[in-house]
Structures are given as C-alpha cells and as structure tokens.
Image 1 (cartoon, rainbow, N blue to C red):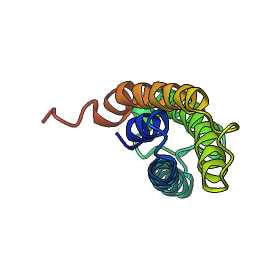
Image 2: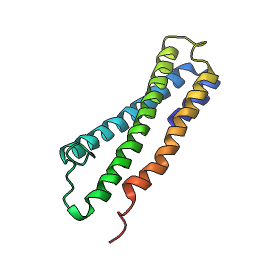
Image 3: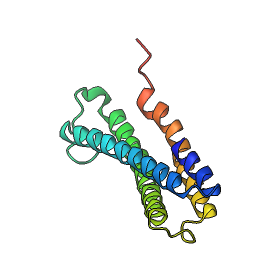
Length: 139
C-alpha cells in the first residue's frame, strides 16, 4: 500500500509524500529481511540447512525434510535477493526525491520500481502459504 501511495504521490508531484512513503516501504522491507534472517539463523543452529551438517530429529523423514529445506532456502533466498534489489531501488529513489533530483526520480521510473516491488510481493503471497502454512491446520 505504501508503495502504491508513493507512486500516486509522485505522479501528483507530491515529492515529499512520495519520498516518505518510499522510505516507509524500504523500512518494512528491511523488517522483513531481519525477520527472515533471524529465521535462517535459528534454522542454521538447529542444523536444518541441507548438506551442511543436516540433522533432522526423525531419521525416517530426514530425506524428505532435507528436500523441503533445500526448496525452502532456495525459494525464500531467491525471494530475499529480489527484495534486496527492490529495497535498493526504493531507497535510491527516496534519497533522490529528498535531494530534489526530480528528473532522476521521475514518476515513470518510480512506477516501474513499484511494479517490481509488487511483483516481489505477489511471489511472497504464494510462497508463504506454500512453505510456511502447509501442514499447520492438520491435527
């Protein structure tokens, strides 16, 4: 939502509002990365990283668990990489607007950054239920 507000604000030449919304967007992206980093740290210490001393408590399901964690780290890591790219774009445009560089941070460029940001959001909408919610409702 903040990114969409930033795009619309920049189109209406509300430069300060656009810069603030971009910074808030970047802040939420950073919070997401910190949370994901904490999850990775926990999984590292629980030896759930495939091929790096993987140790799953139930040996009967260790192979399936290792495959799951391989896919989990691969997909969420790729998502995090794309989020970092989007984060850098958002921060660069926010700083450009804050410095008065209106041509550099033109409305059409911010709109393209917004489309990229939202595409990364859409990927997470599918990854989260697929990797984090599956099996939670079964008793």
